[in-house]
Length: 344
Image: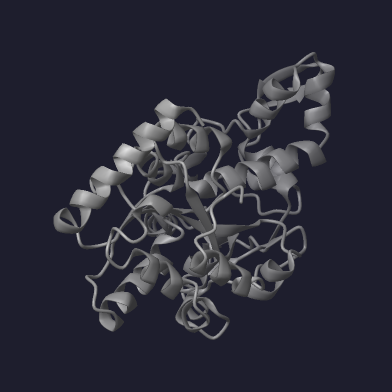
């Protein structure tokens, strides 16, 4: 690290130490809409059980939260970013450029992305990644060239699916959920159907082919939902043929309205997600600015409380809401207690 960077970072931390406690006495959190309900449960319990103000928890999506997290060090910036994906190298670089050099990564457990429809709607009970790629791709390779996706019904994508119009409600691009959907469903489906290989054979480079694999049609049959899962549920309520992408926890809290499909022959559950058997699942995280530890009142206490056995363990309130408890939770607890930063 250069002397200039070290000095700038030291000055930022010193300024934070001098002013933060007086200017702000509550923990501030933003980020993933998937992590939001878990963080809200913890924040409320923390406020009730500790002599600190209840943390302020906002949503906005993983990318948005990490962008705010990386804005700098100081009481005008957030302390924690919630994320339904791991932080990217380019985000770590952006953080470092703004003086956020020591980041603690905390894995809180696992969530599964599920594919659900109206409980009394068409028989959407079993999908594969190939089905979703064929239904949602903007363009598909055909006769040596890329053409607009001709599929208009789910049966066009797979004759075993209901012959009803495609009406998919998927998370918008600013949510971590979308990225996992692209990687483990669209790109995987593109590979499984042979479409990726065909694109490469047409002369596309790997980046262009992968981009084509995850490009979603814009003709109205697939709709990006930029808000949270309640909006997706509202769209399905209004469309009997609609199918939405949800987090497992949200689905489990709405089983009176929704039915869930298998993916690749595996039903989503806490057991299949924890074991890795269910193919569309991901770990959930939050990221802490170590520079704010010991400065923002209650920050470390909140983090330790969040990953405690009583809260994040298999018998805690987060598991009751749908979080799959991390089998390595004890290691995470030690990481937080010892303030171990990424790379150390």
